[in-house]
Image (cartoon, rainbow, N blue to C red; front, side, top):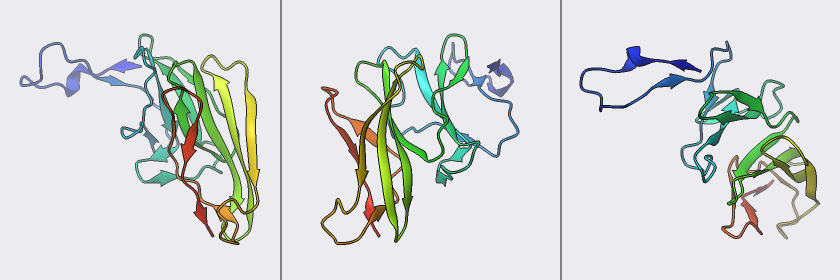
Length: 163
């Protein structure tokens, strides 16, 4: 993490700090402003590597999610699987839920829900969805890249498209 005071102007609010998180030569990384990506204690958040505000290629080997420690600026990979998408941090702030998309438009496939503690331990498959889950008679694919966890931590919601 690099402090970037050079980006501040005389009109910037007092006490404002600006940091650059990455120096990689990847085309872009993204922080989902429209999703709950900070832990409840605001000490960590998720960074979407090899992504941009309008999407990414989850099958790209450089595509992954990283946990950023706000105090140290340290970035630690939390996902490495190809097809990782739609992460959500649990209300307790210690677990990441995410999906691994192994579907193809018009063909179908599998969508796995996984969870892992934010320290990288206890990674497990919660469930795997295959087949026609929409009652449309068509296979599903293209999960939306954001999901959400209910406030009691018992439900995960995600949008998918019948193809």
